[in-house]
Image (cartoon, rainbow, N blue to C red):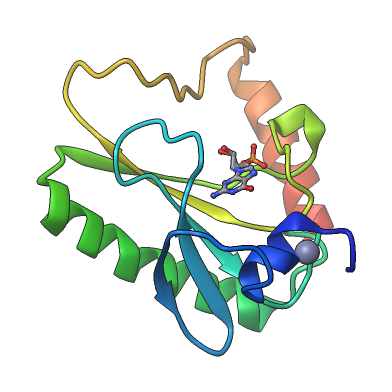
Length: 137
Ligand code: 5GP
Ligand code: ZN
């Protein structure tokens, strides 16, 4: 993808603060970090989102995220880490090249990442919802 900024960063055409690199991934510091040490795991092969990503790269990406999470925890002594991955504008994706956020967290910090309870569900609804997903697997 010639006009993709993360392709250019992953291939080293655009400089970045790289913390890790191998044949398949580059891990960089996010330009607008939620906290110090906020990293992005970027596959070198372009895929827009989780739907375009092949399963092997998806597995390897999570393995890389674990490696980086361990290093970030050791480096900053954070209280927690969010592993975040956005797909589609509606979900907050702003760069159309799959990436995983590794975000150090501290008790009482100002970062807001929430899975809010906004939908009321009764037990029958849960059964219907469960079955919808099972049918689509
Ligand atoms: P998304 O919202 O797509 O999940 O995350 C995109 C992230 O990429 C944002 O947190 C944003 O700060 C970061 N970002 C966007 N452009 C650049 C860039 O050119 N360099 C770096 N290092 N990070 C970027
Ligand atoms: Zn790309």
